[in-house]
Image (cartoon, rainbow, N blue to C red; front, top):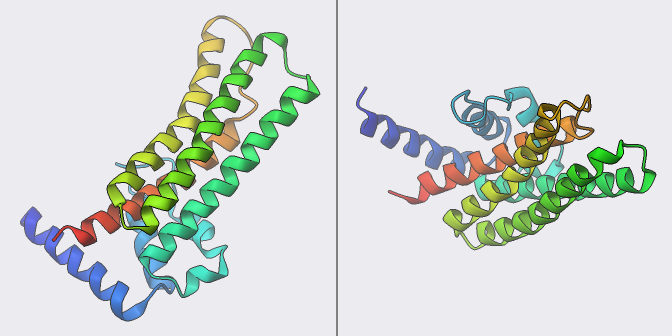
Length: 191
């Protein structure tokens, strides 16, 4: 099928779903199928996406724009929780001294992620989807760089692992959902 025709038909489908059906299981399913494509976000599974969006009761009656805000609120809650968890790790002082600068680096990255998600949400609400995309991408980077810093530590022959791997993975996947919704909103407005 011609790629332009495929994009056109996909846009029509999204428009029809958004304007006539709202977000029931069908739109959440559609969003999560798009979000969990291996090309864009290989770590993001369909089941994780559905569970994350369905967790908020408002998602059952939201349109795509509402789902975008819901997903970004979930990212903000998650980034704030990770930030608090990192502060607790630093207070406890149970990590090896060599790991402390890396954990502090992660704290800085998640401070930036919180700000970026707040800006992304504000941009999304005023339909500045490009701005929202830029800010969510910056937020997503926090999880990557935090985890990557511990890989650098391992390369220096320290037998330490990241105490934040699960948190980084979850935040990366939640950010992927928000980015997928933002990209769907961009596609829906560019006609």
